[in-house]
Length: 306
Image 1 (cartoon, rainbow, N blue to C red):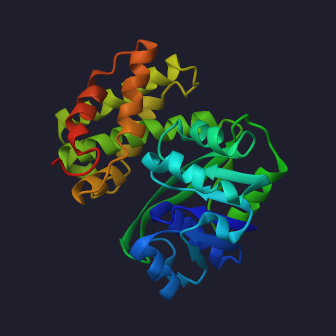
Image 2: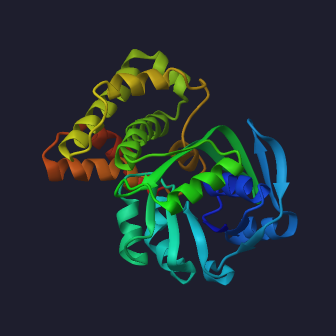
């Protein structure tokens, strides 16, 4: 497949490198020092699961320069969604699939509004990977992708993507219930990111203190109530299941929001806690705990406060 990776950070870099190593025609879209390092030395992956390896694939800062893609892995930060969607339009042909692997539950609609209907698939990337230095991705844990057509259809293109993932050794599941999968991740990610960023503490500390563990659960409960009000069907025991999952995480685990906050970067606050607060206001669902997290982190949304 001719694959364009739009956003070659932790998620895009890790999955794109595995696809490239498996023989797919991958082009990475990056910028600045990261782009130059990939062009000069290839993209190096330091993975807890796959070991260390380097791939030499095309890299560009102009998405249209690689021609029309069969598949675009859309992996930019949520605050860059609209700009990135406009940038990939030259690479979108009549049959191009755009697989969104971003954080949040409303990116797919934004992308479709720009690239046109019928192109976008939803995906939940269950992975933690970050850029260590330009041209180097560190993969800490996870690596699974759950994805599907937004209407739940089982299509030839979705099967082709699944086959490509499997050839690359990427654990993947094609689901007819992608909205449910996105919300299941959203429940965990919004609570995990909010609590680790707010407290500046790793998971082990948060779950060991009754007050912070209780706050974590309150966030998950509010999110589950939002999903129900929005018409998203989640398993009856989703709150207990999410909390049980938290207990399986390494005690040093944090989140990408925590990483960005502690490194002085912009935050995906609006796609996570901000979206939940706004949806709660729209649907009449109280979200006091989510609002507290959102309000406390709001000064850091665009980087360190002036």
